[in-house]
Every structure is written in C-alpha cells, then in structure tokens.
Image (cartoon, rainbow, N blue to C red; front, side):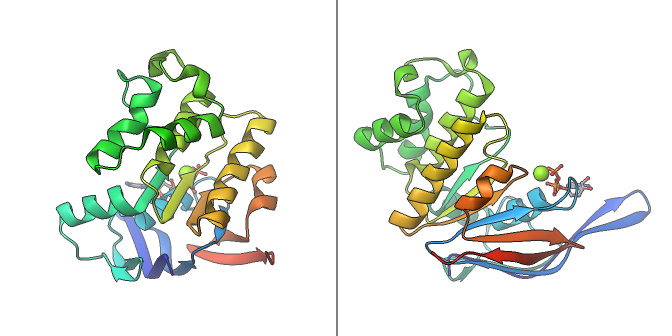
Length: 225
Ligand SMILES: Nc1ncnc2c1ncn2[C@@H]1O[C@H](COP(=O)(O)OP(=O)(O)OP(=O)(O)O)[C@@H](O)[C@H]1O
Ligand SMILES: [Mg+2]
C-alpha cells in the first residue's frame, strides 16, 4: 500500500467551539489505483489531502507512506518524503513567479538531483505546454499554469500523486486530457493517486470513488480495471 491513513481525527478551534472536520477516518490507496474523493464544499476534502501529503499534522491518528509511519518524523525527514515520494497538484498552483515554464520543472528536479531534460520535454508535451516552454509564468492563463503544475508534479517520478481539484480552471476537453494523463501515469507506471474533485467528467477515469460523509470517507463505487 502506498498511502494509509489510520484513525485520523482533525479538529479546529473555532472560538470556544471545537470543529471536528475529520473523525476517526481510515483510508488506503494502493499502487496502480486512481482514487477520487467527492463531497460538498467544506466537508474536509482538502484537509484529508493535506494530511495525506504530510503538509498538515492531524490532531490524532497515523499516516503511512510506502509502509512507513511518518507521524513522528522530524521536519527535515518529512521534507524529504514530500520531495521524493509525493507529487502535489493543488488549486493554487504554487509555481515560482519569476521562472520560465521549463525551469518550474527543473527547480524540483534540481532539489532532488534528478534533472532529466527529455522527461521534462515529454511532460510539457503531454500537458500541451511545450510551445510555451520559454514563457514566464506570470504571462500564462490560470489553466496553463495548472497544466505546468501537473507536469511538475510528475517530474520527480513520485509514488503518490495528490491532486486537489486539478481540473477546476480547465475547459472540458482539456480536463479529460489531464485526467487521462494522470490515469495513464498511475496505470502504466504503477503509481497511486488521489484526486479531490467536483468535476463529473473526472470520475469515469477513477478506479474507486469515495464520498466524504460526517468526517469519514465512504466508498461509493469501485470499477474493475
Ligand atoms: N486551519 C483551519 N482552521 C480552522 N478551520 C479550518 C482550517 N482548515 C480548514 N478548516 C475548516 O474545515 C472545514 C473543511 O475544510 P476543507 O478545506 O477541508 O473543505 P473542502 O471539503 O476541501 O471544501 P471545498 O470543496 O470548498 O474546497 C471547513 O469548514 C474549514 O473552514
Ligand atoms: Mg478544498
């Protein structure tokens, strides 16, 4: 198993009240699985994704990545797991503002000593951005930035891909292409991926669909591959 969340609870303090967003949640994603998480706004989907991506420490419970319990890892070891094992595609794409498109991919690869120019070109081609390689990020549209962020998430060849509304700023045909690309990576390279989405057109590409209900993830549908 690539990702396992065990007995996860996440509470937030809201004045005098305690808001329980995630309650004793268990969740697993295996190699070769593309999993979707759906549910209404505010139900805790992004919270679950940040916990799974070691970006947020839950109130209680354990997070396993590649079989290792990372819950008590010190900061530097956590940073290493994030860099080597996880590819993130988040709504605010967090691209570096002053770099060119291609350098956005190089910056993560350099941190990890894995720069592979051919792979960067292939990924930019796959997301339909190879013609804008030399463009500076601030000149791109929201959807174009999103596509660069998707290419970047794959650059370090992570075992686990976490995507929060990856198609939110894309048109329908581009959305399908992007999800098909994520599905292709998952199935041919035996990766695990979790996509949080409101976009119905994403769901046919996913192997398992979970819905967030009362702080837990409830399996809705499992399609055989
Ligand atoms: N750091 C925080 N402090 C306090 N409350 C928080 C914090 N982070 C999230 N919340 C609350 O937790 C709930 C779940 O938030 P979350 O962002 O996970 O929802 P979501 O399902 O991703 O929603 P959306 O579909 O709108 O993105 C919300 O009510 C939010 O206000
Ligand atoms: Mg969210």
